[in-house]
Image 1 (cartoon, rainbow, N blue to C red):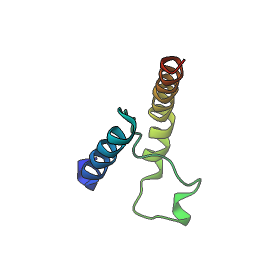
Image 2: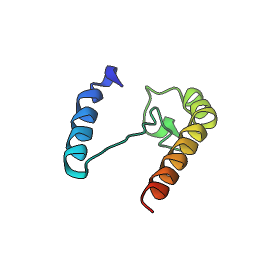
Image 3: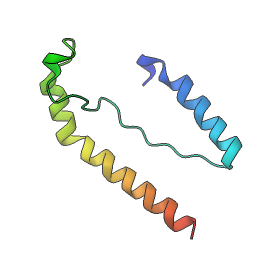
Length: 77
């Protein structure tokens, strides 16, 4: 995240959301799979690495997102 200088933007967004809503939580999923065939769009990406991350990491990120959503739903009832 810091290599892309996103940390500043993410921290700012979280600060603003906390000011508006009183609290804020975030879950990040990086290096996601965006194209079926990277060779047609981007040449600087390792498609095998992307496919491996999609297979091994992305399902875990989705599970964490589901848990977060369930927590939000339960805490608002």
